[in-house]
Image 1 (spheres, rainbow, N blue to C red):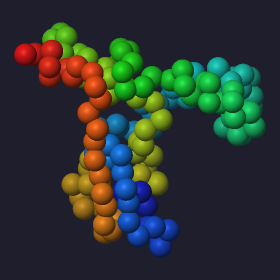
Image 2: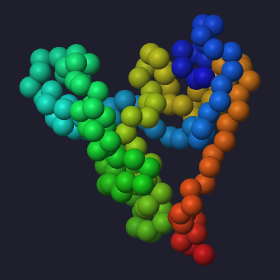
Image 3: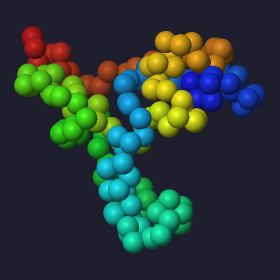
Image 4: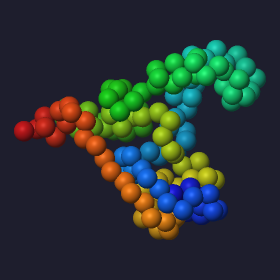
Length: 144
């Protein structure tokens, strides 16, 4: 809904989103490590054109490699953020170290997602969004 300046070009007229809220993601340079890991894991590290090599990787191998990427409950050190020493804040910041989310590239997404929303650069279409809280203890629960 925020891609292409909010212009859907007639491709869709509404949206259903699961966990549709935008979170700060930064630009594409922050995913370079994840891309490099994917290239290495799939055996494309020596290829002249790594993206073309990834396009040729058998789906099961690509799926296995992607599944090794950081996800919501991964806990990895972020080098792009100064992490406070409080364990709950630390957990929250670390858990946002996700791979493969939408990031500003200067063309398709010309700014960080939250900036595009604030600028009103969003498709003017009806949408339904929701978030399901998993059955686990949240970082907020740790404070109480």
